[in-house]
Amino acid sequence: MKAVIFDLDGVLLSTDMLHYAAWKQIADEEGIYFDQKINDRLRGVSRMDSLDIILENADRKYSDEEKIDLAEKKNRLYVDSLTAINPESLYPGTKDMLCKLKKACIRIAVGSSSKNARMILKNAGILGLFDFVSDGNGLCRSKPDPEVFLKAAAGLNADNAECIVVEDAEAGLIAAKRAGMTAYGIGFENPSGVADKYFGKTTDILSAIIEDMILGGVINEQKSDLH
Ligand code: B16
Ligand code: MG
Image 1 (cartoon, rainbow, N blue to C red):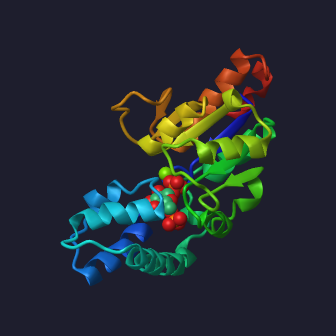
Image 2 (image 1 turned 60 degrees about the horizontal axis):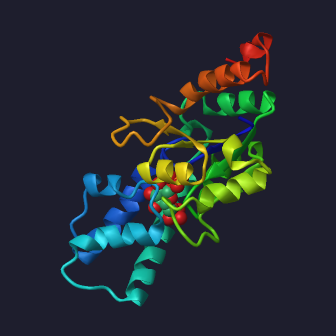
């Protein structure tokens, strides 16, 4: 494996509550029922697709123009709240893990559905560590379509089969497999069995990657101090 593509939200840090607060304000203003359980369904889903899920509970149809207005309003609220993101927002050990992967000459990218990915990475102080950022801007199709990861692999100049995707959402894991990549799932059980391997937290992937590299002869045992 020569490259690792990280999903952002739920893998490097969580913006879940910030998305929830912004969508909750929109839903309350529109008189639409919305709770944390519905919010869980929005993980990894694009902004407009997220809105469609929320509108399943609306008692009227919304026009395309109204939907665009609501999505833009939600995004303004969300972007304002992103000032709260800082290096401490990262899951513990994340920056150290990224540095170790780079030290082992593994190329790293972000593959996120979010159009705000760069701002989040910058606020978290890790934007400069990535060799490529593939985000929601310019994407034609959202996960489970593999487009976001195929762009990341192309940006890293890596073959698809050389890439490991690290994802917390099932749609993202399916997208990784459709791209012909190895899929590492993070954070919850593997009900559909779609992930090649499952880990409790993102930093746990480091040992697995180093072991694969030793087995594949890419590095020798001495370099296992990268653990
Ligand atoms: P934006 P990921 C996803 O990020 C979020 O999980 C999802 O809740 C959000 O709707 C989506 O980004 C789009 O975000 O509105 O900022 O473009 O998990 O793919 O990193
Ligand atoms: Mg995610």
